[in-house]
Length: 366
Image (cartoon, rainbow, N blue to C red):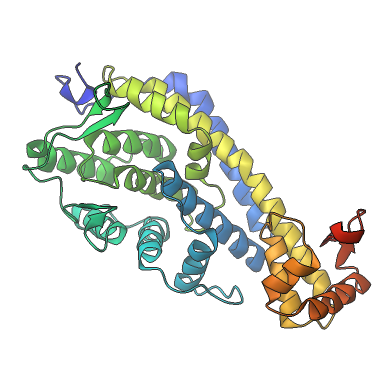
């Protein structure tokens, strides 16, 4: 099997600019419309929207790799780094802190050059202990010569299917020098298109023993922040990729086994990005709803227990709120929980669901 990095003229990637022009123009229009809408909203709403998107981006980028992060811990870590008051923070988790630091460095400092030292810093932040799961890895350095050939493999033992084989470690210094020189100097390419090219190019080189997918998506986010010319993020490419994970890997593999023309990968990347921007509407509506609810709630004098439960409901509490669940969330007795609930119903903040008796439950008023 000949891989794209074995082609004679690698890494001189090509694409059909005319074929991509319509999709690229549509993406630019979507970005402009979304950013225009966000600029018309208040600072607090924009901050909350960006916090939600950054949280989703980090959680979903890790989820693509099979790692499940706690949403509230990630959100708390981002808020702590950006000095955003979210009314209480989770205990510090060093692993999550590192992932958050990498993503914030990529998006908050998008104008800074992408260097080998910066990538090493990201890799060190991802693997602060020098271990990936149960495996000791080389951190903050390219794959060393003594490592086995880097392969993407699926299937059971004896029936393995090799999806991709990365360049040998001996090539990595030259490969990454070429990549970084292009990323930092070629300004003729639209940064949206550059995000897709950089993502593909980096993950094809696969320079690290682990973390290549997450770093490739961080590089794409850096390029997209350059396209938007703002550090705030209002759409999540990683969240959309996670929804389309099968197609993501299919198009990567297809083009990594093809010639130097990556038009098909870029077509998929742009269409996925378009869906990510469209999906931002749901996140914005969620933030606006939270703002409306708190504007209404703040008319009344409610206690800390009630605020905590309302916050949980707005964050997407996944089961029906009962008196016993209220008591658990608020860490109080059932009698106290019932008094709190009755007061919130009186203020028209909560309403009782139709079913009664043992099935009595409550929800936020719309």
